[in-house]
Length: 545
Image 1 (cartoon, rainbow, N blue to C red):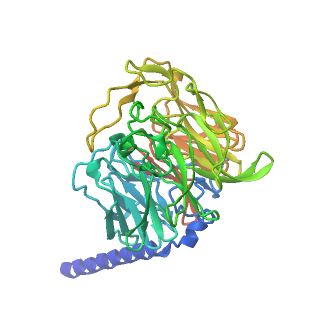
Image 2: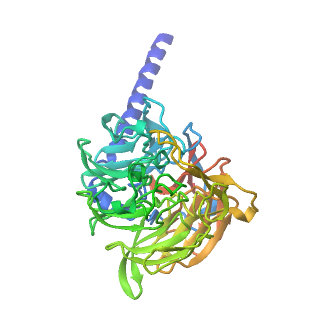
Image 3: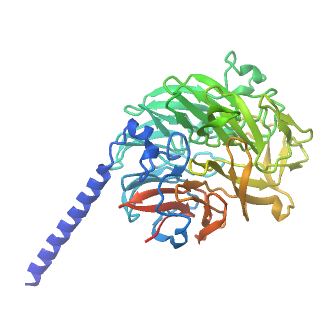
């Protein structure tokens, strides 16, 4: 009799396991394919989060309004997924109940968005040691059709089957032995996936690539540092362009109506010693507008000519349709790392306005052409210069901003840091090694107000700050705004918090106990709104009940 019961129990377990597996597979296929048409209308799929920034305009905003400024104080933890890595910068995407996240250095995991249970995982093994200036991080995936796309730390692009995590193809973007890495989330546009590249501190030459999603064949490459004879090459001296930096660290934005792709570029190389690269050093510290079909440059705008402070312009460009100067404008707005907020015409690249949004000491103003009027004495020196604001990490960095169509405000994580900048004699260039020509990360004796953070709300058409929420430390977390009149973000002290989107008043916080480097998103799970954010090595989802 005992044998019969055991057999029945075994059969029951088998049937249960099969039912669970079939249920998971059905759910995993329910939201696929994610067509280009769906990506175009991503903002209309409020229950999903289909791209790194939520939509092509990079608003990082959700129309979900179950969680509001009236009930947010009731948020509590719904589930926790252990990532087993100390520095998680991923921004998940969510497709009809399935969440896709990355785990450093280059793994992809599919989760049940309701419970946080892992459905499958793809573990990418680095074949060799990779030089990286800033940690073995990864910021997310792109999806198109039934395929996921992820950059790897050793500068490969991998396509995965979204249902199973099976690798479909892999392509080397560039030889990582040269100092390149790839950490940004790709952006899927039409039949291509657009990828940026990292490694500016190793004296590489930056570029943006496009690959066909079906085959992995490269469609085009745009070098952000022009070779001799190309437009912009006259802004470099000698052969400095070969190690000119300008890497494209962070995911860009796309305007389907104008058929323009917008991507930020990083600092020139070497970072802090400009003596070997006289000139403006195009197209470093710029935003470039590219034809997504061909990679052809349509226009550019350089925020910081001849940068010597590592003030990358790799902030996420935010696209807004509004009225400025009494006329309708298609705007590209950005709180730049150099401490100034900018508004550009995204059709033409025309400079419209700039205004400081955090403390800066290096420029008297931005003139009518969009060029900074530099204050003398603001360069790194051999002895070290501690009078320069913002610090090396900038007034803002790679973290996602958010624009709310409900409040018509831009929300930005801002930094106020005092740092000592110095330059050094240039060593001989060696591929795959640091090529910075100095540094800017040395702390000096500072007062608390000289090393603080804040979340600011900016009127995009004027650059006026409407409110500022002060934080103990400069933050690395991105920002999410919602139709529930809320703004979410996090701190280095491990607190995720929610503010009233109109006033900046703090309404809720949760102490996670570890540093926050990622950006929050929100989505629906079985009809109920959840908010998720990586805290330390945990991915935590919050809900109302």
